[in-house]
Every structure is written in C-alpha cells, then in structure tokens.
Image 1 (tube, rainbow, N blue to C red):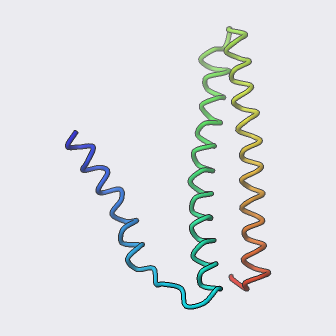
Image 2: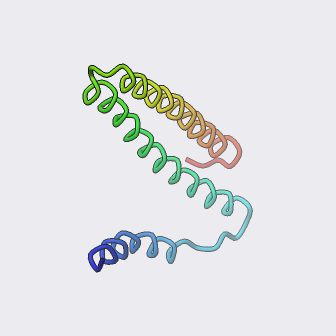
Image 3: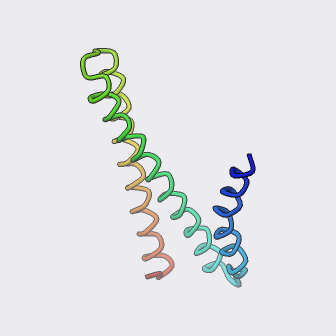
Length: 107
C-alpha cells in the first residue's frame, strides 16, 4: 500500500505545481482561456483512454476470441463504440479550437 501512495503522490505533484503557477484570470478572456485549457487537457486524456479501449477491443475480439462468435461480436461492439467516441472527441476538439481562434484570438 505504501508504494501505491508513493506513486499517487509523485503522479499528482506536477498537477499541484501547475495549479500553483496558474494565475487568477483578470478578465473574461483569461477565464475562458483557463476553462478551454482544462477542457483540452481532459479531451486528450479521454482520447487516450478511448484509444486504449479501442485497441483492447481489437485484441480481445479478433486475436484472443478468434474462433468464438460471441467474442467476435463483443469485440465488434467495443470497436464500433470506440470509433464513434473517437469521432465525437475529435469533433469536440475541433470545435474547441475554432472557438479559441475565432472568438478569443488565441494561437
């Protein structure tokens, strides 16, 4: 259990230092910048987790359960859900970028 807490603390340390360096927003543009940065970071995290789930569906559905019809169907469902989620997240990422560049003049 001690190693779990050590890994947890060392993994949260960069987030704590980032939170300490983020200044409070002085106007609405700064506030929206902070919110869009948080959303962008969350999108990247969810994108990575979805890609891992997609790859696991491919491995489980076609490699591990190669001869089992139910396993292949389960893998197809996971892969289809993963593709839909990746498309939706890519769309949200694009919409976020459009809002940042057009409304707030970032980048």
